[in-house]
Image (tube, rainbow, N blue to C red; front, top):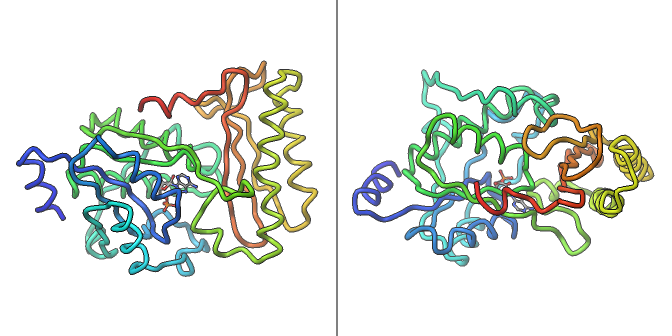
Length: 282
Ligand code: AMP
């Protein structure tokens, strides 16, 4: 891959990259479409990155189907699929990690220590290996998008970032490879997550609720489902991810919720000025 990437670059061909952990769905494929017109070769990586999983997390059971992934990617116009194994990404003696300090700390960072260090490290490795000029990320993982944007800025990486909005199932649940874990009952209960975010959106637009009231309302909707257990519900600044207490103009509502033993995340930018600026330009 390094050789291919370097030779494409030498020949002036721009490589676009969609980093994924596989078990692909429409959310991943939508990112591939975002690369249209931005590059000459569209590529995706499929790699379940061990260093972004904590102890006791789901790395062992994370769903995998490489053959199906490659087929779906090729059908969607992907020219090159990179599926490294863990020992080539982190050979014996590997020692270098990327720590994006501030943005990695709140929200998921509080509950998954080391997660964003693993994410930033693998993304930088993928950028270096592929020599990509553009990379696409989904706002389903909003905090991850900000962490990567910060890394690109801080390290002066020559990679253009594009971000795609969250692709949802017809009933509103954000698409995720982890949805495959859900039982029928948990899958139905999980519909309360997008419902709670929609509720927050409509009340924030009216401007008649404080962040605390919005947070309580979301928690109430989530907890009305016995199979759901919220891990966090936060109303934060869209750029800094710090808690917001005053008037809601444009804020991020971010939630992590257990449906049975499956941890799901979702988010929504809300408020009268809620158009997400990440969608416009990195
Ligand atoms: P993952 O395979 O879960 O690591 O995701 C790979 C990329 O796809 C990340 O940039 C995610 O943010 C993005 N992604 C995952 N799910 C969705 C979704 N439902 N809509 C849009 N992008 C998504």
